[in-house]
Image (cartoon, rainbow, N blue to C red):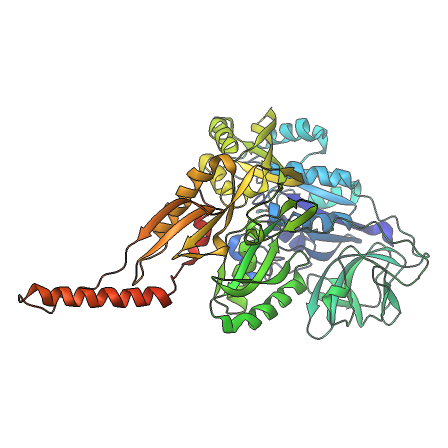
Length: 585
């Protein structure tokens, strides 16, 4: 049975046609009727559809010429690459898809390396050959030189028109090896994802490595030794279809009936025996970017907590912990895989749960050393003013850009405190490798790259280590009160210049109030930049026509007293854009 199973995924840089190719597979195999299918069929999330990106992996079972194809559709954006690592763990093969108009991009290289590390059979495919600007032969040549493929290994297709797609399915049959597990051994199944169903509890998405899963049998999650009996097992075609069992090599789902998703860990081994060894897991996602999320109305704090709990059911990488801010009240410090992941989560919270939120500028985790203490701090406001040493996360970044934009991109990498590791000329462009501080790339680095390269440059990164950083903490005061959510860590030699820039930006984005107030930046007790925001002034003398000047002075004096009282009890309104403007320098 397992000889006719092929488990594979599609690896591609964003916009190279991965979801479109998945649509053609569904259509060609008759899994979804041509009258029903719509673009990005496996992307069920509305935000995913609107943005034109896949943000969640989706498995689907297809039958074609007596073969069972288990496709695990994966995201293409760097922020969701942890989803790709799950897919690779459940597969024996991968299609490496490259756009014939854009060529090899940063994530193409990253995903190829991950697939080879897992020992997967990789099938190179050049897509979009139907477009007028397509350069399929040049793209194929660059794949030969960069990845070492043979020229006869590369397939040429148009996922949009369907040209060459049937040939890809034939090559999957031929080149991707069948699963190697044994059906007569005790059950071992890899949990590669999970989500929550209101009626059936946690649904575990699994790849059966050895043995079989039968409904009603007693199963064990090896990580926590939890015993349960599945309510239902089945496949995704692409909607859930009930089955009698899941056999060796198959990919499907197990409805656990459990009400707590934290009990079902991604990477865990599901078994029916206490004597088997667990399957090698894969790296759990570690959030790299953190933001404070607060309800505009503090009465909605409980609603926000429940909304985050519900999102966590379908997003294993999401972490959050309660925190409070003097300026914003009670909220949560939320961990994301990257800035886009953060944007998607906040958009889902606002749209799906009807919440009005304020989110602070994203920041990274720092390691602080004070005497004999080592602190891991995810909120800059908690960093003490005085410390012995501060370490920041460093990433290894790969940038691929057309040659004509190289000079500008080298400049921006230098400004972002990058250290160049290599520069290599490709068939179509230049490949740069840089060590970069994560804090410098989480806000506007992508935007700058796209702007400087007219949209042609691509970027992929991977965390490597924490390094010592000569930085200082800068506090921001508005109206004499420290706004903890606006605190930043800045390189020491740039503190005065960047402090002035921050204050000037805040002066532009924070509106005038009914009273005068100051905006200040400080390092410890030393003010390094300050502006005074003048109050709105109502013309209280407008109703006077001529008359004695003392009457006007009396009214102005009364107005001044009122503003003084208002300043004592009033709170400065700080708009959402102020929190982002601090980092966009």
